[in-house]
Length: 188
Image (cartoon, rainbow, N blue to C red; front, side, top):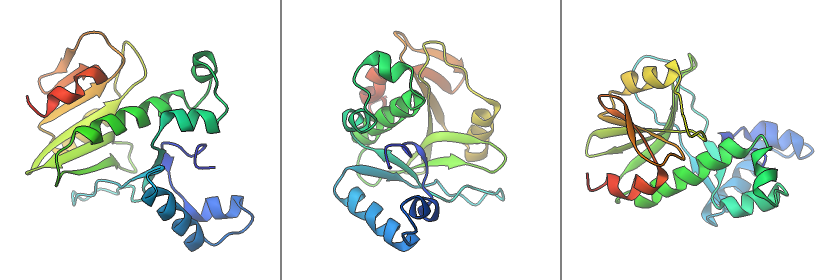
Protein backbone atom coordinates (compact mmCIF):
# COMPACT_ATOMS: atom_id res chain seq x y z
CA UNK A 1 0.00 0.00 0.00
CA UNK A 2 2.91 2.35 0.68
CA UNK A 3 4.08 1.86 -2.91
CA UNK A 4 0.76 3.29 -4.06
CA UNK A 5 1.23 6.23 -1.67
CA UNK A 6 4.78 6.91 -2.89
CA UNK A 7 5.46 10.66 -2.96
CA UNK A 8 2.10 11.57 -1.47
CA UNK A 9 0.99 12.94 1.87
CA UNK A 10 0.73 10.28 4.56
CA UNK A 11 -2.70 9.96 6.15
CA UNK A 12 -2.63 7.23 8.81
CA UNK A 13 -6.40 7.29 9.35
CA UNK A 14 -7.14 6.84 5.65
CA UNK A 15 -4.61 4.02 5.33
CA UNK A 16 -5.98 2.36 8.48
CA UNK A 17 -9.49 2.44 7.04
CA UNK A 18 -8.20 0.85 3.81
CA UNK A 19 -6.59 -1.89 5.91
CA UNK A 20 -9.97 -2.84 7.36
CA UNK A 21 -10.25 -0.44 10.29
CA UNK A 22 -6.75 -0.55 11.76
CA UNK A 23 -6.21 2.30 14.24
CA UNK A 24 -4.22 5.29 12.96
CA UNK A 25 -1.78 4.84 15.86
CA UNK A 26 -1.04 1.28 14.72
CA UNK A 27 -0.54 2.47 11.14
CA UNK A 28 1.85 5.13 12.48
CA UNK A 29 3.85 2.44 14.29
CA UNK A 30 3.99 0.35 11.11
CA UNK A 31 5.33 3.39 9.27
CA UNK A 32 7.92 3.94 12.02
CA UNK A 33 9.12 0.33 11.61
CA UNK A 34 9.50 0.69 7.83
CA UNK A 35 11.30 4.02 8.24
CA UNK A 36 13.64 2.54 10.87
CA UNK A 37 14.34 -0.39 8.53
CA UNK A 38 15.32 2.15 5.84
CA UNK A 39 12.61 0.86 3.50
CA UNK A 40 10.60 4.08 3.53
CA UNK A 41 11.52 7.73 3.81
CA UNK A 42 9.24 9.96 5.85
CA UNK A 43 9.91 13.44 4.46
CA UNK A 44 8.68 16.01 6.97
CA UNK A 45 7.14 19.29 5.94
CA UNK A 46 9.46 22.26 6.13
CA UNK A 47 7.69 24.43 8.67
CA UNK A 48 8.41 28.12 8.89
CA UNK A 49 6.43 30.84 10.62
CA UNK A 50 5.37 33.03 7.71
CA UNK A 51 1.68 33.48 8.48
CA UNK A 52 0.46 31.06 5.81
CA UNK A 53 -1.44 27.81 6.17
CA UNK A 54 1.13 25.08 5.68
CA UNK A 55 0.60 21.40 4.96
CA UNK A 56 1.80 19.57 8.07
CA UNK A 57 1.50 15.90 7.08
CA UNK A 58 4.70 14.14 5.98
CA UNK A 59 5.25 12.65 2.53
CA UNK A 60 6.21 9.00 2.24
CA UNK A 61 8.61 7.51 -0.32
CA UNK A 62 9.80 3.96 -0.94
CA UNK A 63 13.55 4.61 -0.72
CA UNK A 64 14.64 2.09 -3.36
CA UNK A 65 13.09 2.77 -6.76
CA UNK A 66 13.74 -0.84 -7.85
CA UNK A 67 11.71 -2.14 -4.93
CA UNK A 68 9.00 0.45 -5.69
CA UNK A 69 8.78 -0.75 -9.29
CA UNK A 70 8.70 -4.41 -8.21
CA UNK A 71 5.90 -3.73 -5.72
CA UNK A 72 3.93 -2.00 -8.47
CA UNK A 73 4.70 -4.82 -10.95
CA UNK A 74 6.52 -2.47 -13.33
CA UNK A 75 8.88 -4.76 -15.23
CA UNK A 76 10.15 -2.48 -18.01
CA UNK A 77 10.71 1.16 -18.91
CA UNK A 78 7.59 0.97 -21.07
CA UNK A 79 5.57 -0.20 -18.05
CA UNK A 80 6.96 2.67 -15.98
CA UNK A 81 6.52 5.28 -18.69
CA UNK A 82 2.81 4.55 -18.95
CA UNK A 83 2.20 4.38 -15.21
CA UNK A 84 0.88 7.30 -13.11
CA UNK A 85 3.72 6.78 -10.60
CA UNK A 86 6.48 7.59 -13.16
CA UNK A 87 6.92 11.23 -12.09
CA UNK A 88 6.71 10.40 -8.41
CA UNK A 89 9.20 7.56 -8.85
CA UNK A 90 11.64 10.01 -10.45
CA UNK A 91 10.97 12.50 -7.64
CA UNK A 92 11.73 9.89 -4.98
CA UNK A 93 14.90 8.78 -6.76
CA UNK A 94 16.20 12.34 -7.08
CA UNK A 95 15.32 13.24 -3.49
CA UNK A 96 17.27 10.19 -2.27
CA UNK A 97 20.26 11.30 -4.36
CA UNK A 98 20.11 14.84 -2.96
CA UNK A 99 19.79 13.68 0.64
CA UNK A 100 22.74 11.31 0.18
CA UNK A 101 25.00 14.27 -0.69
CA UNK A 102 24.06 16.42 2.30
CA UNK A 103 26.46 16.98 5.17
CA UNK A 104 25.44 16.23 8.78
CA UNK A 105 23.23 18.72 10.63
CA UNK A 106 21.35 19.67 7.48
CA UNK A 107 17.58 20.12 7.71
CA UNK A 108 15.46 18.86 4.82
CA UNK A 109 11.75 18.73 4.12
CA UNK A 110 9.14 19.64 1.54
CA UNK A 111 7.19 22.90 1.47
CA UNK A 112 3.52 23.24 0.58
CA UNK A 113 0.90 25.82 1.46
CA UNK A 114 -2.84 25.44 1.19
CA UNK A 115 -2.72 28.15 -1.50
CA UNK A 116 -0.55 25.95 -3.75
CA UNK A 117 3.00 27.21 -3.19
CA UNK A 118 5.23 24.13 -3.29
CA UNK A 119 8.81 22.92 -3.40
CA UNK A 120 9.58 19.20 -3.54
CA UNK A 121 12.58 19.62 -1.23
CA UNK A 122 13.93 22.45 0.91
CA UNK A 123 17.40 22.06 2.36
CA UNK A 124 18.71 24.33 5.10
CA UNK A 125 22.24 24.40 6.40
CA UNK A 126 23.81 27.21 8.42
CA UNK A 127 20.82 29.46 7.76
CA UNK A 128 21.05 29.08 3.98
CA UNK A 129 17.98 27.66 2.20
CA UNK A 130 18.10 25.87 -1.14
CA UNK A 131 14.97 24.73 -2.94
CA UNK A 132 14.59 21.77 -5.29
CA UNK A 133 11.80 20.98 -7.70
CA UNK A 134 11.94 17.63 -9.49
CA UNK A 135 10.51 17.24 -12.99
CA UNK A 136 10.49 14.20 -15.27
CA UNK A 137 10.76 16.22 -18.46
CA UNK A 138 13.60 17.19 -20.76
CA UNK A 139 11.99 20.63 -21.09
CA UNK A 140 10.74 21.27 -17.55
CA UNK A 141 8.46 24.14 -16.68
CA UNK A 142 7.64 25.30 -13.18
CA UNK A 143 4.36 26.60 -11.87
CA UNK A 144 3.52 29.85 -10.14
CA UNK A 145 3.52 27.83 -6.89
CA UNK A 146 7.24 27.17 -7.33
CA UNK A 147 8.01 30.89 -7.64
CA UNK A 148 5.72 31.69 -4.70
CA UNK A 149 7.45 29.05 -2.54
CA UNK A 150 10.90 30.42 -3.44
CA UNK A 151 9.72 33.90 -2.45
CA UNK A 152 7.99 32.70 0.75
CA UNK A 153 11.12 30.91 1.93
CA UNK A 154 13.67 33.40 0.68
CA UNK A 155 15.78 30.66 -0.89
CA UNK A 156 19.31 31.64 -1.82
CA UNK A 157 19.28 29.18 -4.76
CA UNK A 158 16.74 26.91 -6.39
CA UNK A 159 17.25 24.01 -8.73
CA UNK A 160 14.90 22.20 -11.07
CA UNK A 161 16.30 18.69 -11.34
CA UNK A 162 15.36 17.07 -14.64
CA UNK A 163 16.77 14.53 -17.11
CA UNK A 164 18.58 17.20 -19.14
CA UNK A 165 21.99 16.94 -20.79
CA UNK A 166 23.22 20.46 -19.99
CA UNK A 167 22.29 22.87 -17.18
CA UNK A 168 20.64 26.18 -18.02
CA UNK A 169 19.30 29.14 -16.02
CA UNK A 170 15.61 29.91 -15.49
CA UNK A 171 16.24 33.06 -13.43
CA UNK A 172 19.09 34.73 -11.55
CA UNK A 173 19.13 32.18 -8.73
CA UNK A 174 17.24 29.30 -10.40
CA UNK A 175 18.88 26.69 -12.61
CA UNK A 176 17.73 23.54 -14.39
CA UNK A 177 20.26 20.77 -13.71
CA UNK A 178 20.80 17.09 -14.30
CA UNK A 179 20.85 14.68 -11.35
CA UNK A 180 24.46 13.99 -12.36
CA UNK A 181 25.32 17.49 -11.07
CA UNK A 182 23.95 16.95 -7.57
CA UNK A 183 27.29 15.86 -6.13
CA UNK A 184 28.84 19.16 -7.27
CA UNK A 185 26.35 21.41 -5.46
CA UNK A 186 28.01 21.10 -2.07
CA UNK A 187 31.34 22.29 -3.47
CA UNK A 188 29.98 25.20 -5.47
